[in-house]
Amino acid sequence: MNILVLNCGSSSIKYQLLNMEAQPVLLAKGIVEKIGLPLGIFTHKPEGKEKYILEKPIPDHVDGMDLILKALTDKKYGVIASLDEIFAVGHRIAHGGEYFSHSVLIDEEVKAKIKACSEIAPLHNPAHLKGIETMERLLPTIPQVAVFDTSFHQTLPPKAFIYGIPYEYYENYSVRRYGFHGTSHKFVAEKACKILGWDITEKKIITCHLGNGASITAIDKGKSVDTSMGFTPVAGLVMGTRCGDLDTGALLYICDKKGYTSLDAVRLTNKESGVFGISGVSSDFRELTSAADAGNYRAELALDVFCYNVKKYIGAYAAVLNGVDLIIFTGGIGENDERVRNSVCTGLEYLGVEFDEAVNLKARGVDRILSTPHSKTFVMTITTDEELVIATDTLNLVK
Ligand code: ADP
Image 1 (cartoon, rainbow, N blue to C red):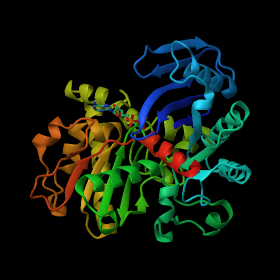
Image 2 (spheres, rainbow, N blue to C red; image 1 turned 90 degrees about the horizontal axis):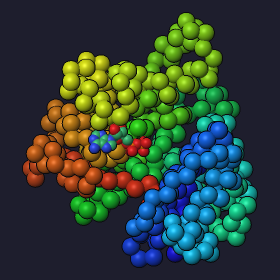
Image 3 (cartoon, helix red, strand yellow; image 1 turned 90 degrees about the vertical axis):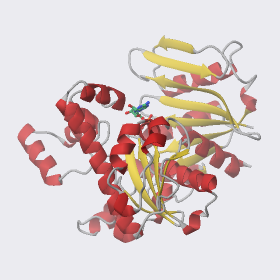
Image 4 (cartoon, helix red, strand yellow; image 1 turned 60 degrees about the horizontal axis):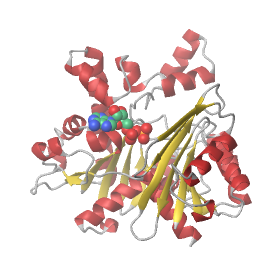
């Protein structure tokens, strides 16, 4: 049974086709980029076959999806004989608001709710809807499932999600903390417990998803009880290009000084900030590390700020949970950057962490325990797989 996983952005479509028969197997993945621009790019990577790249104008999402479906069934680059071999489609949806605490089969009512959330996720949800409607047109008989970034965090108690502003903004405009990366936080916590033979309902876990976007979640007995991203994914940690927690007064001051509109402020805080903004070098941690090693002060500062932020949230969430059994690192940085993990875990002895620097040094892109056998609190690096979660949820709902 093949599941097509889609992540539709405003100008891009990322996809994976997975065979979910016994052991999930990736058949192909790729990305359509620069939709609507003068020149689009389509990159298709079939497993065990040559990569296929096409550059041409891709006016809209229908054209983009058309390219994907043709590539999947192409004689040379394809991995399936016909589109009938696609059992269902699973969509990553950024924002489910307070409507969805689980993945759901998409129908008219679900679409209306995703649309209702567009107001609070204008950069993401309209593009997701476009993706859903495109698939309805191109593959009308195939069921579609929505998997939300926000749903795992719907267990947050009000004291963790209410902001310190007049309550009417929550009641009338749904302004509250929602949290994101939910599929990843849930997946790595469950995977780690499986590896350790633990019952998640007895454990206190802090998951650090550190990628271009980065967030930390406090998980108590398997449920998300607090998380660092907020109403939007710009809150919490300093990230690649996002600012993370920022005094609203500072932002208003900057807007006054520069005459910025709210759109300018979105650009500043989402695209020009984070470690990129601090360093002026890059948002990529490999490039930052090289620059810091070469003596670039601001690159080193950016890395320091990032690690300090992660550590601060771990401390806060240990307080929230009244202790912690396991700290997990995941995402491109969490899975690969031993220096970040080392910097974060140095000085966590008060939490019962005995960090094994030698093991840490060699752990890249693997599932591994990074604490010593005597450590009261476990530390692990766990590889995440959001597409697999989406495919699994899709299969379970459609079956
Ligand atoms: P996204 O949020 O876009 O999914 P990823 O989870 O892929 O991001 O993480 C991207 C980040 O991971 C980049 O900052 C990149 O530098 C970092 N990264 C990837 N591989 C390595 C590595 N081997 N060492 C250090 N950092 C890495």
